[in-house]
Image 1: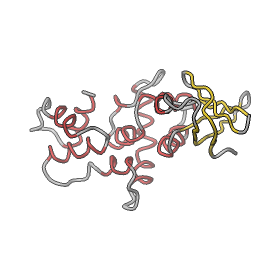
Image 2: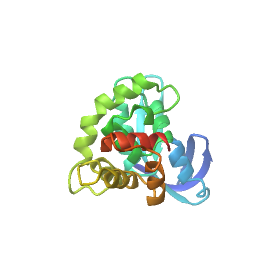
Image 3: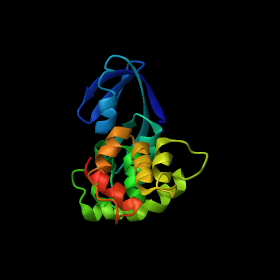
Amino acid sequence: MFYYLNGTLAVLDIGMAVIDCGGVGYMCNVSARTEQKLATEIGKPAKLLTYLSVREDAMELFGFYDKEELSMFKLLISVSGIGARTAIGILGSVSPEKFAYAVSVGDVKAIKAPGVGPKIAARIILELKDKIAKEFSAPADDSPVAAAVSASAPKGNKLTEARTALMALGFSKVEAEGFLSKIDCAKLSVEEIIREALKRV
C-alpha cells in the first residue's frame, strides 16, 4: 500500500519515527540502525521506505532507511515464527550486510536480538541461506550485501580472502587485520577464520 514516505522528520524516539507528509504524521516502527541514521535529521526532510504489516488486531507501518534493510526485513518475516517486531530487532543489532554474511556462513552467534536464541538463529539460517545466496549472488548486483556474500569465494591466500571478506562487511583494513592477528589461522578454513573474527567484533 505504501512504498515510501517522503516528508519532514517530526519525531524520533526509541524504535519509532514520525514523518510529516503534508500535515499528516505517519508513525513508523524503525530499527536501531535506522534510528541512528536519522538521529541528526529531526526537523529536516526525510524519506523512509515502508512495509505495512496487517494483522487481525493491528495495522503497523515499519520504516527503513535503505532498500538493503527493507529486503532483509522481508526475508526475515518469511521465516516461520519470525514476526515483524522480531525482524526489526534483529536488524537493529546487525547490519544487512553482516546479517547476509552471517547467514551465508552459518554464523548462529552473529544473529541476535531480544527473544532470539541459538535455535531461532539456526532456523533463520536454515530457511534463508539459499534465498540470500540466490538474491544477492548475481554478478550484476554490486550492493554491499552482494559483496559480503560473494567475498568468501576462493581467491587465494586464506588471510587475504578473510581480510577482503571483513572489509566487504564494512570493517576497515586496520580493523580486519587487528581481528585476524588474534586468530591462529593455520588449521582453519577461510569460513572459520571469518567466523572467529566476527566473534571479536
